[in-house]
Image 1 (cartoon, rainbow, N blue to C red):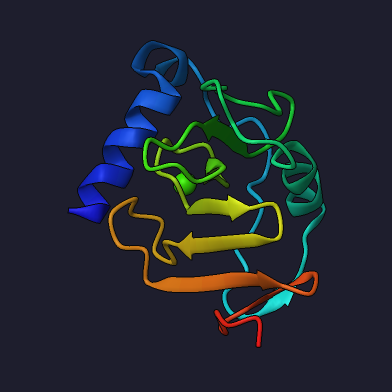
Image 2: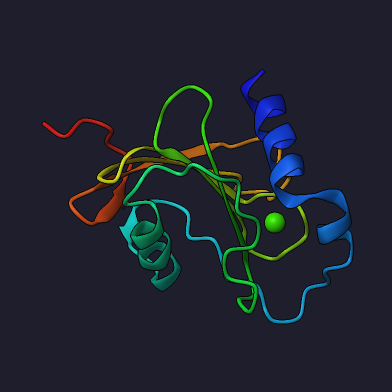
Length: 134
Ligand SMILES: [Ca+2]
């Protein structure tokens, strides 16, 4: 159910017509699997989610080789971030922003937009497999 919901949310965030016209124009950003420091794009996204996301925003960085969509979350978190690293219209990552310092990052390591088989949490400025702040 969650996977289907993510796909539907991405389809809404992407917008069929807008994404259909987009073609990859630059090498894709590689997904890092496993705990890691923040990427440059992560820092840019984190800056944008310091306040709750109230409006659907497609392709926040249109010149970037990746696509980022911000969307309000109907269940009350700060919002969601959908990241398509290679602009193939399949989200490679979905972030659930529970608070600016509490973010769950779900990664589709196969870029199939269906299976988000790796979950990381933002903790002390790095992505970690540990959810707890304790
Ligand atoms: Ca993708």
